[in-house]
Amino acid sequence: MLRLYFFLASNLYFLLADRNNRWYNKWAMGKKKLSKKPLSYKMLCFLGYCLAEARYILSYENLIETFELIFGTKYNITTLRKEFSNLKKEGLIEFKTRYRKPYPVLSQKGKLAIKTHLPFKRYGPWDGKWRLVIFDIPEVDRSYRWAMRHKLAELGFGQIQKSAYISPYPLLGTISRYASELGVRQYLRLLEVQKIDNENQLIDDVWHLKEINEDYKSFIIKTKREKHQTFWPLRAKILEQEFAEIYEKDPHLPEKFLPAGWRGKEAYDIFKAISNSY
Figure (tube, rainbow, N blue to C red):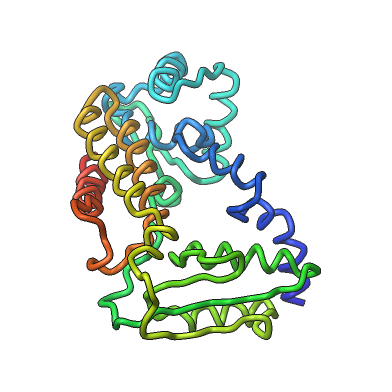
């Protein structure tokens, strides 16, 4: 039953999640900017962090101007009113009183809804071994094949061939359990090796660390330019999202494999400072 449910639910999802699929690429481009976030997210950010700057007055005209300025999207009043009503119904906002006048604030559920989450990719010191995952899942089970690729990418594995992935971290147990849940464990080969020839060249070909480092550098430069402008929390949310996208691409390899002048740690520290700045 679990396998059947996953098949039905994942046919569409993992069509999008396949990083080699043209539909996924189109979808991924839509994630690149916070302006693509749903209106509910933008309103929650404003209510949670910018209402004081607006003197605790919720003006739809002010929202229209602010969202157009920050996100480049113009909404009409009817749309904003409807979204605000939905936020109340879903329990994402509640009300407090200030000078005997009610004003909206985020509920705990609302705060969690807009919190920026980074994927967990810290696996401790490297033990000097490489882990290989090789699979040959039949075409009839292609949705599970897409699911497996998505899981491997999520864990930071690098693709060395069409259905062969590599990681320096002890994640074979995680992959084995996941494959068993999907019902495709019999199609996988999991290997642990001590040495790979042309190691540094393989890392360059698979993970493109120099490009990721350039993204970190660009993020650092942008934060200095954007720092503490009008409606800073909304701008901070944009920066947080941009960092999260870079962080997700970063395989977090052992330090010995990082290129000279690696800026990942500096960018992460800036991200944490931004998250604590509002």
